[in-house]
Image (tube, rainbow, N blue to C red; front, side):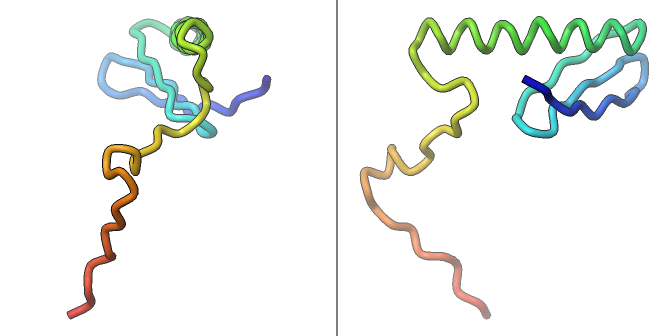
Length: 77
């Protein structure tokens, strides 16, 4: 699987944000360190989701707690 990362420095921390999925990691040190940390976070997500038998890249169903109720969009003034 090929992923694109946005890597930037914020203070003393390097941050790696995946562009395809909401997965991020941070590390001090070098860009290589933050990429390694991202790989660990990514692998952990895959392992945890496999254990729970859920799609690691699926979006949570935000409507489920509403039990089918529809919230209308806000009205324009």
